Amino acid sequence: MTLGSQLRGAVKRGELRVHYQPKVDIKTNRIVGAEALLRWNHPELGILPPGQFIALAEDLGLISGIGQWVMALACRDAVNWIRAGFGDLRVAVNIAKPQFESGDLCDVVRQAMQDSGLPPKQLVLELTESMLMDNVEASQALMADLKKLGVTLSIDDFGTGYSSLSYLKSFPLDELKIDRSFVVDLPGVKSDVAIVRTIIELGHRLGMSVIAEGIETSEQLHCLARLGCDRYQGFLCSKALPVEEFMELLAGQEATAP
Ligand code: C2E
Ligand code: MG
Ligand code: MG
Image (cartoon, rainbow, N blue to C red):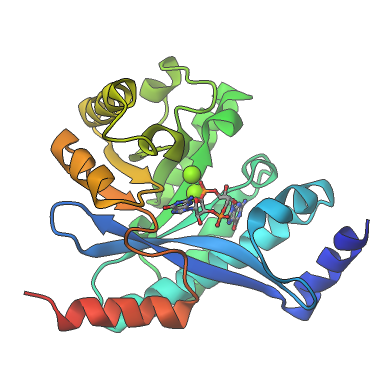
């Protein structure tokens, strides 16, 4: 109850923050984008991760407004990175189920593109299997409209949801994001290596790129490189950072560019 009423106020008081976690190209080892991850800078409890308040925000009907704010900010930040000469970076935002079902997601995306000037393909929407599967036909129609706008569509936490393979061919997805649970025991556990190898091959054969999340060790990364994974995200490169620190990381990368 208390956290709920505080959360309503938090949005108005500007206590929400967006941190950015780098996405790294495995072949070149360069940062090619970032995922926007929400944080709540709580006056007494300090920085709270989304696991502690996203569900509450959904229950209180606040998540669509918050998601819209995250998208607008992330697009503006990405434009700054591109203008600063850090390359054609992509920024990814997580879409909550109520946002996906709200009926105005296309308008929200269009508005964010217009206000920021970000080229649409530089915006990645991270969707989840469960939100797509509730109403497959409506999802197909919405995703087709989003593709018309030119944005990039990714499926987050891949393999943990309904794991229905039939939807993969009917949804216009650009990227599969392998869930952390499959990579945590790489390269030691043979069954996980087999699953990850199969997901990568499946994605590639369907014309998608594949990213792995939650990479913490160079052993995991070497295994992914060997299996042909395109990109990774994880503490091995960096945790999610405030935008100034993320830009310092990009600047450091430019300084050491070949
Ligand atoms: P996600 O989209 O799957 O994001 C990846 C989560 O894994 C992030 O947790 C990230 O900090 C964490 N992570 C990244 N690398 C590593 C690693 O190497 N090891 C470990 N142990 N963890 C790693 P975070 O930031 O706590 O976010 C949790 C979830 O909250 C996200 O999962 C996403 O579903 C949701 N979320 C975050 N921001 C937003 C948002 O703006 N809107 C919505 N609707 N959901 C959000
Ligand atoms: Mg995500
Ligand atoms: Mg994920």
